[in-house]
Image (cartoon, rainbow, N blue to C red):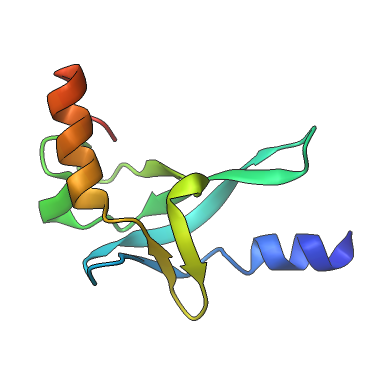
Length: 97
């Protein structure tokens, strides 16, 4: 259990980029499912202003579903969030953050 906790806390502070190389934000915290002992989301701050314009108020953060994560290393790579945000917005008619 200790190594799992260490792995989870090591995510905090890492920069998050889309697989197309676009900076998304920085991990401030993680969202956990206690029952399954798994990470379900990454709480991001220092968001890319262009990417989240009109979706998140200045100074606020966003939670990215962990299922979007493609790789974890020195940085975290996620599926192309720009395409996802645009397609989610078109599908639902609402902004997604």
